[in-house]
Image (cartoon, rainbow, N blue to C red):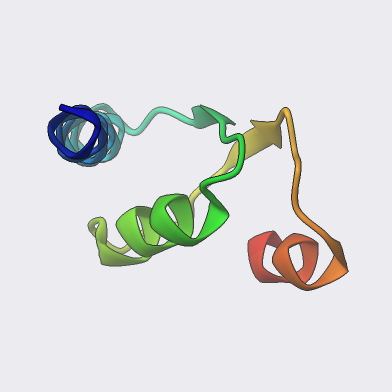
Amino acid sequence: MAATVHLEQQAAMARQMHLAHELDMPVVLHIREAHGDGYDIIDAAPSRDRPGIVHCFTGGPEEARQWL
């Protein structure tokens, strides 16, 4: 069950990234203990300047540098 929910969350985030790209809108990311997954999804999203905010940050310095 947890794996299914995790996959559904990843798919929903990917859809949101594509929609933000289509509408040229910024994104606000609430990522808690899932920085690797979140970054991978954003990295795979359509290429463009990706303005937005990452809040509820639970990562460390290495993860923070990745988002800059």
